[in-house]
Image (cartoon, rainbow, N blue to C red; front, top):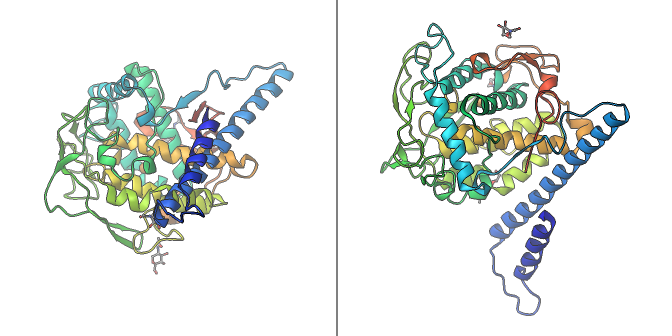
Length: 406
Ligand SMILES: *[C@@H]1O[C@H](CO)[C@@H](O)[C@H](O)[C@H]1NC(C)=O
Ligand SMILES: *[C@@H]1O[C@H](CO)[C@@H](O)[C@H](O)[C@H]1NC(C)=O
Ligand SMILES: *[C@@H]1O[C@H](CO)[C@@H](O)[C@H](O)[C@H]1NC(C)=O
Ligand SMILES: [Cu+2]
């Protein structure tokens, strides 16, 4: 099925190449490059998925020979889909579950976060408290993988959701994310863009030693359409805008959900070329640094990586704040895409990549800390789950996990 799609694309692209007789070019070079990169990315994605599934079958077969039964097989896998390619009722099922979670009571004690009200706030609190350890560190990818899984389990076990968390394929919608199935504001979206505020500025970011001034999006105000138009954001901000009540943005600060979705950031930092580039990073250190942003090899004054690209395509409040960004429901689909890239990258060469780690246990190694090891314990606090070793989160088909991205 997928193969014939790729074949069709290839055939179409041949038709569009400048032909020798007429010497007519239908696409400009920049467009052609993006299209070629898209095709290369699709091939790599397919190759990675094939390898992952083949390995899964092989593992099952070997266990069978040893008289054991595999727990994660093609039959038990959760297949994670791109949000826009899901049926409308399934998209609605997802946002209904998220709304349900917001209505359940928080488990975080008021002594830790007086502002935590909904069960979703437990996830925001966890992220605020652990931000200095799980970004620009050795645990970034593994910790967020676990965090997403605990969120998915909460949606399923506490709110009756049947599927996995969908992902947001950034480049697919980069030219007009505000009109995409994710943010177009219809009943099957993740809620709309923020209302447009004329003349509003883009964000100015100060990370590490880098300052980045981002272009503004097409919103800036409150979300007034779609599933999360009435959502109340309780926590933060921490870093962006006027700091919320103490302790460090964990006080009660009810306000509307704001977004500043637009193509400028998406086109510049999370296009097909940027995503393809991540796959060209051979070792885990380069790969995770390139994804995350500051200090990337191609960084100018504005290297924010594809991870930053996705975050700041949403922007707004709390989406634009690195600490409280999980307060915007779009966060989880964005990070599912980050996890998807890691999964595929690992799948392309599992022998060297499956258990590869790089970095220490603190952001930018400040304060200095130990190198992250496979035995290092991670947790997601009151969000749920237990303490896991990094080893347990390195594969999506072993340990507690059993999923792939389609
Ligand atoms: C920031 O700059 C200082 C001084 O040049 C340097 O020691 C430090 O490593 C830099 N930090 C990052 C995160 O690049
Ligand atoms: C696409 O992304 C690459 C790498 O991030 C960047 O250098 C390039 O300028 C982007 N393309 C466009 C059209 O913005
Ligand atoms: C999990 O880790 C946290 C943080 O290190 C620790 O406070 C807690 O006691 C641990 N829980 C268990 C059950 O080991
Ligand atoms: Cu994060």
